[in-house]
Image 1 (cartoon, rainbow, N blue to C red):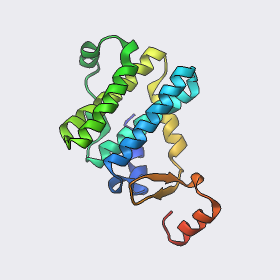
Image 2 (cartoon, helix red, strand yellow):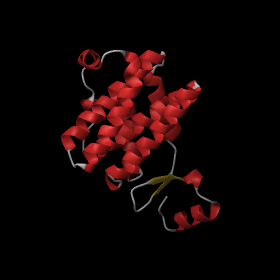
Image 3 (cartoon, rainbow, N blue to C red):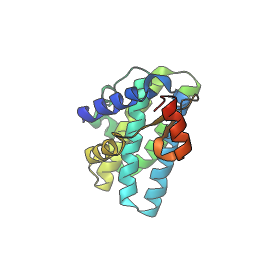
Image 4 (cartoon, rainbow, N blue to C red):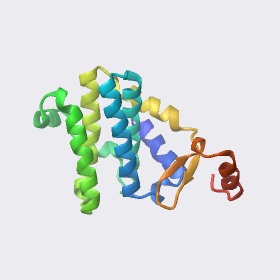
Length: 180
């Protein structure tokens, strides 16, 4: 897993997401990815569930990078985590709660709470995968394979926009400005 987190972090640096995005912009992306997970979980769409898990991990890795932390350093001890949080079937709700804690930590400028919440998110994802019989590492690998060649543009508000979301005219303009 370490290789994937290193690759994700380097990918974000190469695209200037780290250090030029904002915690607020990445929190918005985290909420978007959680929404996709919630929708796919409700619908029973296993492929989108796996994709969303990987995407949430990518965003958590980027958030950690924005505060100069390695997401793997934030991963709490699994045994302690399960003892404190209990039944795996609640892992989805714990994930929802910890994503909310990320937002609160950003708003309140509480870096220590942000660090612990990001670590909890990794554990929540792992617990959710265990409960659903999903290989967590394969979700991360799939997310990495999806983004590794992705290009885009970091807007002034810290939001990364994928190149495939641009019109041909917008792409040509960005290429002329050497922003891709």
